[in-house]
Amino acid sequence: MFQKIIFVLFLTITSAGTLYPAESDNTIRVAIVQDVTSFSLRVKGRFEVYDLNAKKLIAKASSLRKQAVRILNNKIIIRGIPGSVSALQIAPLKGGYVFINGRIFRGRINLIVKPNGKILVVNESGVEDYLRGILCNEVAPWWPMDALKSQAIIARSYGLYQKQFPKDKYFDLTSDIYSQVYGGKSSERWRTNRAVDLTRGRILTYQGKLFPTYYHATCGGHTEDASKLWNVDLLPLKGVVCNFCVHSPHYKWQAKMSLQDISSKLILKGFRIQEISGIEIIGYDGSGRISGLEIKSQDKGFPVSAKDFRQALGPNIIRSANFTSRIDSGAVHFEGLGWGHGVGLCQWGMQEMAREGSKYEQILKYYFPQSELSTFK
Ligand SMILES: [Zn+2]
Image (cartoon, rainbow, N blue to C red; front, side, top):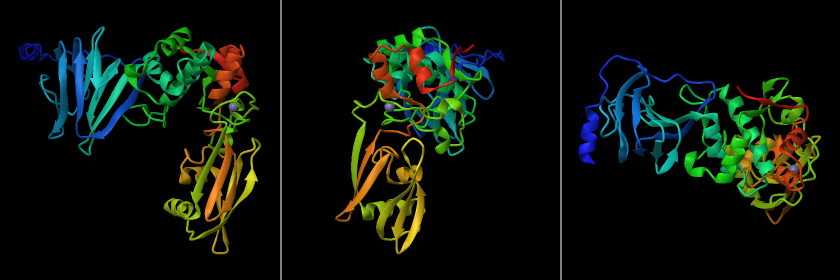
């Protein structure tokens, strides 16, 4: 193997020829590792290495054994790859894959040293490959095929919509819940890949344009109007009645938290409160969710939106904005319906609709009224 690496060195490209591959419209750049000083890298199969800044091919190699990539003087050091630079791209040739921290990724991998001296690792792939790496993280692969197809279409639309507003100079999306949870080829399953293939290029639009096709686990009876949470006022996101998620394991939730904990969490978010003497719901929106609460402390009332209240206490503890609360023995007992922000498609409702025989076109039309199915070119 050592001899193989030495051989690779002789393939280093020294000519000024620029062979940097052009970015296509359906390429999505996902940040998969951020702010680290080292990570493990392995490449299976032949690949090329480009200097991302100079947009120039700097090396070709036939494979790379697992190793820890490090930074030295703001340059990326990879054993077996000469000409260290501060931003490079590993582009596997046909049939090759890159392993990052043991996970397999399709497409190209960009390594960038940020001004703080830490490494950013970005996976650049076509939108269809990106979808393969997220679908299984968002739905169970054994759900009915029309549910998986619906999920593929809204995840494709959501990713392409978000790509219009890149999160960074070097990437469009993150690989966590702030975009869509992406795990590369290691996350793929046969049935979810099949749903991606069967809906290839299909997207949901409104008046001919992409829009944020939000989704959530379980709405609890009525989806939310996006304009109540964010600056998004669109007909397909106004909220609908949903009787399909009633058997979801997330339909009902309960939580208990001491008044002292609630007070500490709200103080951390900037509320100037002390001991809490009461929590009062002061308004509901059209979907039955709470719009605002008032926290009583020291004979004063502190208004807080349900969205901020959830964020402060933890969105996985206060699972939705549809709840009641009662104070007993120094603790608040919450009982609520649904899990998630409630906007757009209710995933457990989608699953039930498909189980009852609805096709993906009907499911999408139901949760996103006035939207239309289109093909992304
Ligand atoms: Zn629902």
